[in-house]
Length: 282
Length: 280
Image (cartoon, rainbow over all chains, first blue to last red; front, side, top):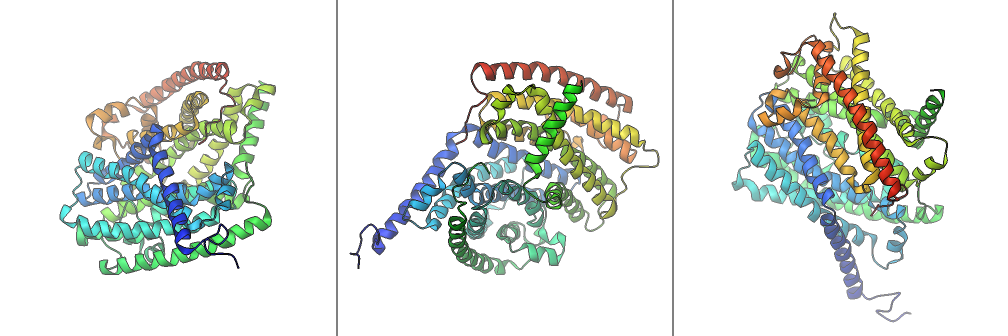
């Protein structure tokens, strides 16, 4: 029997320290990288803001009540996170494989989930600067009103939503692990169609109860719906009663995390058997 | 000319293989049309939710036409410059263009044709979806479909030349500048009034909008397909004036693209950027 705490069988506290270090290391890389290239900051802040502005102006052109413009600004901020889930979480192992770094992750004696958690936390930190710019810009430029007295419960729901959304990103990450060029197209298809089904620009209930309930498997759908209800009450045309949403988000987070763990192990083993974990230029 | 046609055909075919051979044709078409259909439906539900179920079909028709034809701008503008980055850095094949008996500009133009093709699929499917599923009438009794096709082609030429300008820029900038090209497309989406009447733009933004050829292009297409204009600030312009602005701007973009691309290509070769790898 190997002694406690050696390199092959580290003790629990050492294992925990290693995994926490991996979380920190992966998160800090992402945070530093996000400010290293100024064109990224512009690309991820100003340009999504432009797209959001176009949709605000659609409502303005339709002479819609002002809270609809608020729906779009909130949706625009949430899109920043969803895009980070897609391009910064789900596709990340694909990029790492293309750059020849995936095998380095697999060599390390830490859980893949720790690496993904680091990516998620770093991604959230990075994206928050973008989302904040969109929210502040939308508030100042379009005079959108967010009642500050309701900001705390909205923030709580927002945190739960991010937990569930990034857990879903971990599942997608395992799926994308072995794919080639289809990653691009799948990531693309997870943008506009998800903007539609999650009701980023309009209350999701407008699509009808059946479609909206089905779309609620996406955490951003219910999260956004709940946040709008917190800020705007009945004018948000909410899908589900607000008290239902936090427990659903917590349940989704737990479910997605479990599935992500299983999927990661399965896909990694499959990749090893098929020799696809080091394939590049696919 | 025959040689040029050969290069265009070969590079368009190559572009099609790069874009489409990762999936079965049906699956590829699903992917190609998902984005335009989703955006159409987002706008549909936005109009519907505001008008409480009695969506003003006339208003939505203007939005629908602008959004649908803007697919060309997004696809082609981003597509051409993306080709440069992919060939240069991912496939590392851009340098081989110089050891083959062809020039870079016709090669990229041919690659752009693939994007035009996929965008056309998106536009046609979106138009059919609007007609069949959403019950929108596309065209009025007086619509001259040959003129519509000519207007689409003329606007498309302008988009192509602007794409060449961006492709030239891509030759001398790092890969991560790609999001600036994508942003330009977003900027046009906002400023051309693709999905809202220009009249809701602030005054300063309207002035920029009136300097963009796609503003006039979308207005002309809306007039042809609905029989009426959309932007009150363009109401004083006749259809002929719109044609004139689009034609002149296309010629200007062509001239600018040829000069700019030539300079960028020469600079990229002088600085050794043709096989540059900037992906990090």
